[in-house]
Length: 264
Image 1: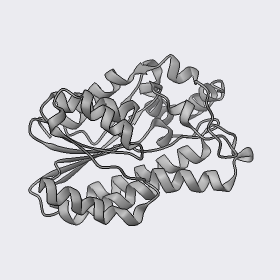
Image 2: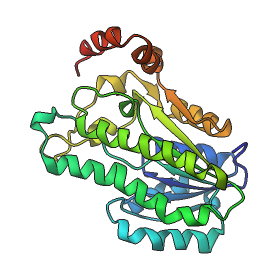
Image 3: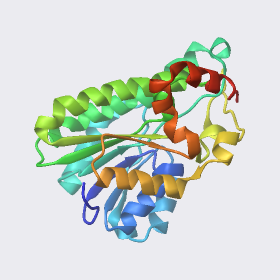
Image 4: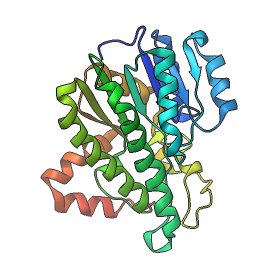
């Protein structure tokens, strides 16, 4: 996608953080944004604060209510006739050791982060296949490239996303559907506050990685640049975080010695 002017962009998880900031930036570039999340009042707030609020549409949805997705897709298609970019941004994180994490939490993260994202993709895919060109961008995570303390369920869900969308990229290239995997790390959002602990309660604490990390504004700018350049994957973060995947691949023993020292 070379530019965003007059494009139709559907954003899940649009009620806060990166989703909210992405909506602001692309709407300022002239795009029409479809804002989806569970909290209708927050979506309305964001719509009314945009540069071009007339080019925004509130479409509440719950990533666990996957039976509603065909109707949501139909509503979008009937109203806008096209979807140029679908940004999968909805998701939830986790902060607990695997041994202290209930299976209910493991299942919830897979349901929201993986199955919800895949279900929406499959619901809209037949429509995208009929378009001349379309783009799917997935807000994955560096946790989708390697595991880390207190992220067993979260990392597993992101690994699953990586596998699904790398496959989808290969399969749908013939239909001119582009796929960009966005892997941020250490971004200043409320992801740690909103994460679940091992029992399924809200973690409610700030993480040093987020507090000392990149702003959501800068992260979003880099995401937009990656989409404009039609990159297949991009790692977004500060300092050595951006190089961690390369270090793991080239110097695995050194990588594991380094990461063991990074306890939360």
